[in-house]
Image (tube, rainbow, N blue to C red; front, side, top):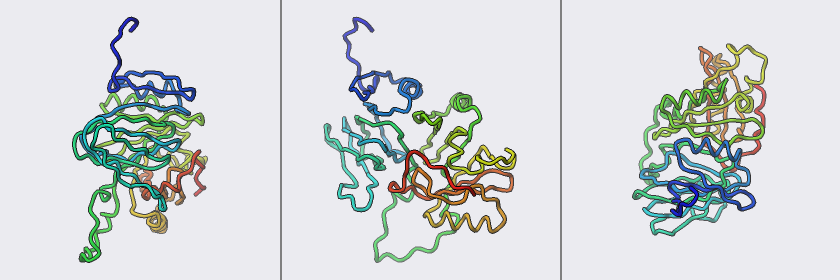
Length: 308
């Protein structure tokens, strides 16, 4: 307010710096993420200065493909873990427990936090194209010693995990409005100049509800690029199943299609770094088969998937 000399605080007002170094404060409100999209588009060339308080481990990994991220501790104690590619000589885990301690996460590196005590941190983030993926339950389990007895082979279904539901929205804004009215907190990714729109909601156990517009669906699902009728070739729901390896995606897809189930999208290396395929269940619902993500295999801008 004009004439008000009370300084803003970083927990109530974030700041966006553009490519020229000019600052634009933005109030932290329930709809501030939508305001970020409306005011700053795809966030190209911009940095977001923000702060967050967290008392539990982050439920996701995140990755910033367009620049390094700076993270500084304000209070608390947590480990910042990084999924560095093979051959990288940097630390894979950095403990931040003294106020003022900071870490720089390299461009394109997936990272997450394991909390030792309730913490607050300051972030300087190149927000364009930010990606997230759920933390897998097995990532937090200790590895068995080489001398430990080999465990019994687990049942096949324990190697599968329902981790994601994708909705392909006919009217993207209307869909987000409905689910927000339902009480779900949804974060929309910055909009791209190519017309792609994507948003997601995250549950503490890692389950994700994702929203895609039809433009994005055409990149990862060949059925959306065919002339088939919508009732036969264009499911608006994708049930996401996580598989343990990239090879498992190809093997499961081959087994299902050999058994007579319809393949919507043959296995391919998807732009977000996973091996991915889609099959159809008997009622026409799409089921996505996805491997763990490999940062080294990510590509941008997205490349259209091969025809099935």
